[in-house]
Amino acid sequence: MKVLNLSEVEKLRSAVQNAEQQFSEIETKIQQMRESLQTKFKTVLEKHQVSQINEEYLEGFFEEPYVMIPKRGHEWYVIVPKWLNMQVGYLEHSSKSYNIFIVNKYVQWLSEIPETLREKLKFPKALPLKVFDGMLLTGSELQNQIFEKYRDYVTSRSGKDRIKIKPGYEFKLIAQLI
Image (tube, rainbow, N blue to C red; front, side, top):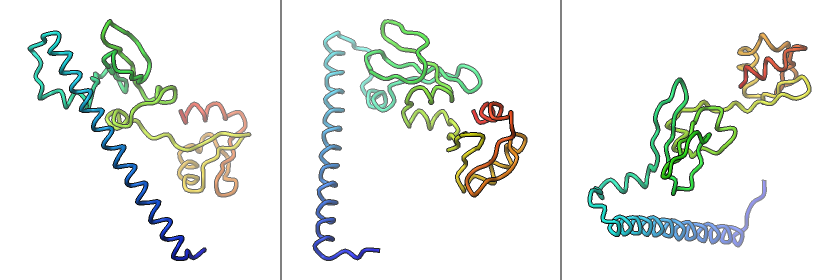
């Protein structure tokens, strides 16, 4: 382990302070952009004489600009205003003003889902497993748990981080992992 001298510590301290200042500036700019967007939104509403707008709900809209409606099982419709450049899941339908997406646990492999949505949908975290050359690569932490769970498809442990797959069971195991 390398011991840092005083000048190296000072350089690190300076770098950390510089990074904190940059983060603060970015945070300020994001807040200014958000306020600007809200002001523009209000201006457009006033311009078109939309008097039925309750401004107290605008803040909530900007925090969560979509609607989630259960479809069936573990699938949801996510409805997003078209003017928002937001792609979540599979686009099922589009009107003049809204995009309607279908989101399920499989869609997360094809498109990025914002973390706030992912938390609400409670998708299971994907296990960090890989199938390669007749072996299931598990990592040392998961080897015992995975061996027990998929014992119908595997034969033996190999080292601390892999499990040998039964001949002819590779595809069936992959289907179970999905």
